[in-house]
Length: 91
Image (cartoon, rainbow, N blue to C red):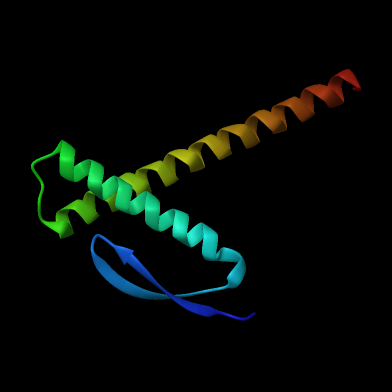
């Protein structure tokens, strides 16, 4: 698959990133999300060191990812139970 190199800016620093053309828009949205969270933390807390702001951003994103995983697992369990009920009821 063809990849392109784009430069992204996170918290005032440029990074080259290799991506496929179909993921460029998602990558740009991710960059906006990270920069938005860094800005929010900067204005809400007395944290000024960019590394600390990025660490807090990484923690928040990791937490959201894990919480989403719990939701997916819960939904899968519900679907399994619904399937079992449907089999018993012959639906």
